[in-house]
Amino acid sequence: MDRLSQKTQLQVLAFIGVGGAQLLVDAAVFHVLVQWSVPTVPANFIGRLSGACVGFVLNATMTFRSAMQGRMSWQALRRFWVFWLAMSVISSALVRSGQALLPADLQTSGALTAVKLGVEATLAAFSFIISRQWVFQT
Image (tube, rainbow, N blue to C red; front, side, top):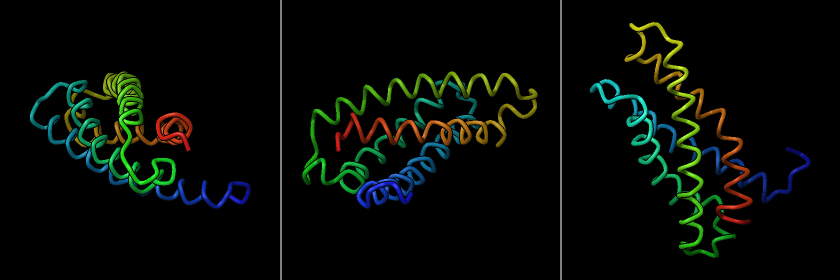
């Protein structure tokens, strides 16, 4: 991180913290819905939607606050939802693929939630770059 500006370093740390909160909400909602026999893809979208609401507000007001000049932007909100939809389609396809690789007795347990956590962690780096450069334009 030595090569990154101090502003970028702080943004990365804040993004990780916000992402952690967002991921906890997302994974918890996903896990509960899967336990209630909701199919994987709808459960993933609903979980991601829950986490996204938390993530947008926290990233707009904390992580990328200077770019937002202290206020919420409708333009940023529109970009966020376009980006969220694209990432949710990718996430759902990867989670569903991971589910297909699991033995049948593990598909409704914590193993599927672990697959989801791995997928979301992998997508996190792309999420920071796109959020910083396009969604919140810092």
